[in-house]
Length: 159
Image 1 (tube, rainbow, N blue to C red):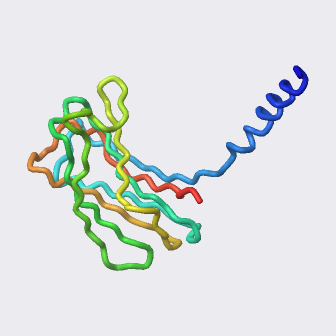
Image 2 (image 1 turned 90 degrees about the vertical axis):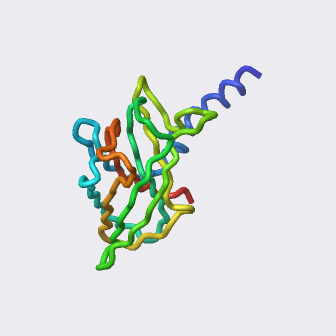
Image 3 (image 1 turned 135 degrees about the vertical axis):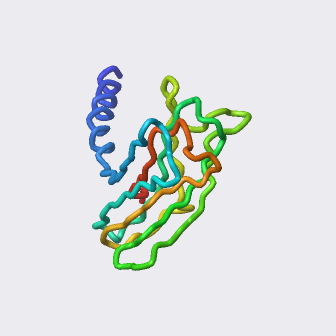
């Protein structure tokens, strides 16, 4: 009986490294904001290249802020340009960062919080080529204080 128990454990640990080898393709780029102030005139641009058009992807906005950030949300315009398109598509988003019941919704360490907020409702198909994003804060405060950086994350959706 002891032998079979040890064999099962050995097999479990022997198979685990192979089960965890699924390739996860992720692109993430974050732009630091000078002095933790996001001026409305500062519109960070982020581009990335997709080579696998057969996969589906989730797209996120990444925000890092200090605990001193004054609001529960962040209004942004996201301008997207797909490969081969001359048209830039704008999208206004109200990104929820906190709730009165739970406080900050992102993950935190000390007084810094990070939010990865999915902006695609479900995984999307992307054509091969270079995508360009431009991010603009459209809050009433200018500059918007206590924002450390802003970015875009694109990850291959699980099959």
